[in-house]
Length: 364
Length: 263
Image 1 (tube, rainbow over the protein chains, first blue to last red):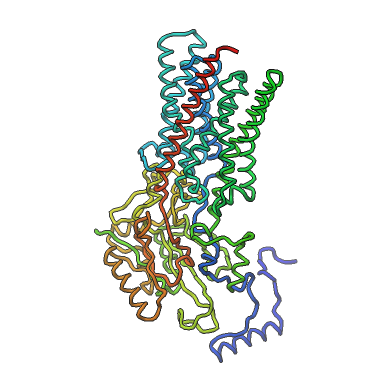
Image 2 (cartoon, rainbow over the protein chains, first blue to last red):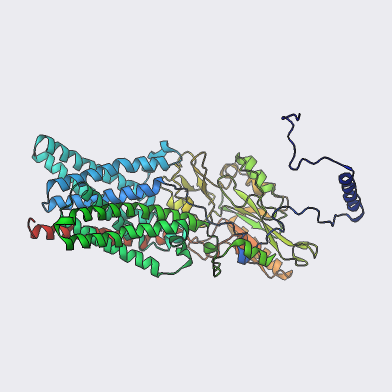
């Protein structure tokens, strides 16, 4: 029996007369000529690929992939929905809409302020160091601006929800109403940037698919956040509000336009939004955020009260799922985009789907 | 104490990887996998959180005289890559904690005790240098041997380089030396030698300049590296428009609803 402690080398050859003669031959050739001409065994992968401007550096990506996984797109979704909900809730309160809507919006906002830091901390390699972000304010860093906006938003949204909760419980009181209104004002001031700064965050990077869309991402993400906020409010039972219906319709129209814009534009850096898994996620998210809720909401308006609620709830669920998938898709597309070594080197893509292997073969 | 730089001359590099070893030893950077890439003798691939110096092996078609190889063998060029220490550094601008700072020597330095691992610098570097260490969670890159420079010494890689392919010194004189060297190479018939320093983009020049032969893209050096802060104006404008749309839309929706009265 073999001793398991003795590791056999790959192949596990037994030396014989042939193998030893071959080694002697190689030695003699090296002595005489100073080098060995025989090819011998070609290593796997030989011949070695040749780097050339057309192949970049062996097709090794220049840019690093984003280190973000599921936490960050989920945070984008939560932040977008809660930021927009705070604005909707405050405006609803100022215009005297019904109390339940205002309260629900406040709770969505406050839930967002609890979940957001948790998700951010879960993403950080060193969770204990979340506070390090609060030691400076850097206007030129969207990440720094975003953290401070989140802080301000948390303060405002929590104050509003707390004051609202106490009034529901113990009846109206002037100081609490002042606190609620002040909290709402603060949560609107910070909620407006909070609901769409994530578009700035990923737009102002070196990842081609993101910075190509830097002028649209904040609007796109903001609209996506609004449609999620409206959807959650409707599913919480506010499915009779005409204002919410109008907002949902408006958001769906903008999302349709955004989808059309992306589909109409053809550029190699937009490929991850259209091809592969990331493309499927982005496109599904787009359908669920734009055309589907638009159709369902239009139908609910046309059909009248009988089916209206059911259709609106379906539209709401679709918009929420679409908003989440949109963020997931965009982050995933960023990973794919970073792997595209041609873009930062300004090397044109070959027609008909390109692959590094084939190009190498051409040059070897 | 002066503002310093690296001048990495690929025409002198022999591909010995002494700089990689010296860097890892001096800085205590861990082993990062023993892989066989099949890409010439480069089994490291790229700079990263555990690779702060990286020797590139660029193979060309056989060309007599290029690199002094035998006519039937592929022609080689080697170049030791490193963090570019940009004048306008994307990572430094993006860092939300202030962990990334500019040192008195002009280098870009990540203070590990302040870095919180948000990884925003990773997507802000146009050269793909800085990277998050998945085990540790923080971002790492070349320190420009800040500790050695503080002590009046030259960086470990430059010290270990046996051919002085990696030169280190005061930035202005080094730029001059680089230009002279390129001229010298041209006069010797190497017309394709050129200096790479990204001075004409938003990066605004680097503290690591390179002499390479041929197209810098073969060395994975981007022809037009831009720092992402140039997109900020467009991005925040879009954000402001989006905010106005949300505020205006919500106001109109609820005011119109109130005017129509109860259903």
